Length: 151
Ligand SMILES: CC(C)(COP(=O)(O)OP(=O)(O)OC[C@H]1O[C@@H](n2cnc3c(N)ncnc32)[C@H](O)[C@@H]1OP(=O)(O)O)[C@@H](O)C(=O)NCCC(=O)NCCS
Image 1: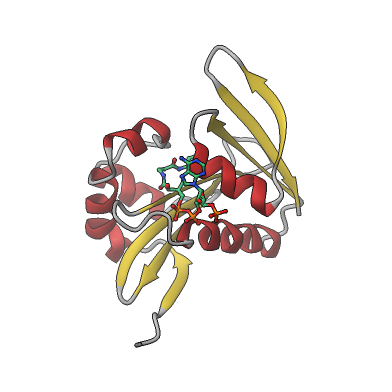
Image 2: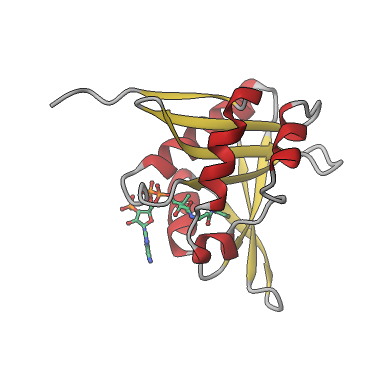
């Protein structure tokens, strides 16, 4: 069988149309779990020139199938977010993308990464627990967990 080519790299302006399509075609359930910013092209263009935050794509055989981010929100500890293209879930790509994004965080000099995840987001929680994130706070009202990992 032909070897699959996976590329992880920072988001570029030339990715905007494809990322826009990926984000807007996420399932309705995925959109409930993943709403880091508006999914319009103007916003995506602005992300490419962010001076503090980091946005990445995962490319499989020339097609963007994953998107991840490390955002500071004016703090010093970056917050991780990620999604996998509709139809490409449950093949291990989310785990690879999270692991790669954490390596990138380490390379950028961060010592810790945090995230927020909805309690019922089982697939995301499974990945985060698998790679070593620990629950540091529960928000019972929002049914959300805050997790952290030391790099
Ligand atoms: C969360 C997401 C990134 C996972 O990507 P993925 O490529 O499907 O992840 P993987 O295949 O690497 O791993 C998924 C894991 O969850 C498990 N899983 C999937 N659905 C599950 C469920 N309903 N209950 C329990 N475990 C589940 C899988 O078995 C797998 O675990 P394993 O590797 O031990 O077998 C993807 O589903 C997604 O984009 N979701 C919408 C956006 C989102 O929720 N982002 C996270 C915001 S915090």
